[in-house]
Image (cartoon, rainbow, N blue to C red; front, side, top):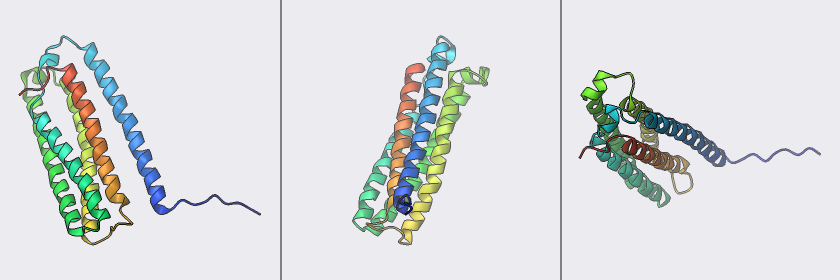
Length: 197
């Protein structure tokens, strides 16, 4: 008599894969933030470390938190079979995520326009802030694509109160992006001149 391992249900495998993906991203970003903090501490006293970050970072942070909140409401809507509301919430999240990306690009343009950055564009704390913000932005872009896919599938009725893992994972991914961005913003705030208001 042979024993075969029990196969996991499709949703269960997707959940484990999603959690493994988020865990690996968490290690990557925490390592990146730690390297940034060590770099910034080693460069204390340079002119760039006294410069404030653009206020656009705060506005984009508020938008990112709003996206996460809307996606949380969307997970409740799918469980209650509120398809129209679900599609509107997901579509609104896609638009807000695109606005977040536009605000982030504007903030980075503001930083790169400062004389402290243009004098030494290849090094310094601002350069590292931009690198980390771009890395985060690339993950946001991936999240926007996935969110648009989930929204289009929701529009054609692919999700219901029993099958909604993709929506739950989208919400988890955006909550993750929130947490990582908040950690980055705190690290940036502490190691630079704060945020220009």
